Image (tube, rainbow, N blue to C red):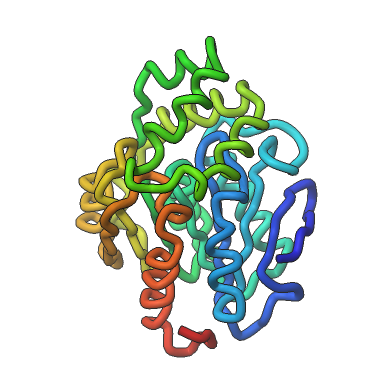
Length: 261
């Protein structure tokens, strides 16, 4: 795993330089998160596709402050993708990251050969208790993080690195992220998406229940969906092998791309 930086955006990559003939997953974390979420994809897909996992501005090891809108995050990711000259870019996002991918598909199609939407929705209303807890008791939010973000069937040790990375984040950045999610709504625009889209839902996702993904599948003309059992909202880390296989199966629809299933 290679650690790099581009214009203040820190990221890790499965390989460097990126291999020109392979698609490049641009993995985008959720609200208050970091690239740590995607360790199972960066490592598990190495040698099969290029995989780049970013820290959004103000998150992880990236510079600056977070953004206050999904549109602004999408603009930053689009600029980053162009700057690293990512071959055959496929943005892949969880939760807020999935909102960013939708915005990229709609507003920056030049950086979207395809898109992958995991545990996300076209509208992401946030429970007021989450906003209040982050604002008034960030430690309490961290303590309860796994209880609402993961399945009870998932070993907490598998998610320890994610929880610790989230705890190192700044409360104000996490709060702005969730406010950006709360304002996000592209429900009416989904039918205009033209690139191929994979939607991944998980049975025990309490934050973005499977019905959110079913709506995406119904409204995006190019979408297909994979549903994963015994996993919650953090499905890329809870079930990395199943998520990785779903991604590879999806990419099989692009026969001109070079990768190993």
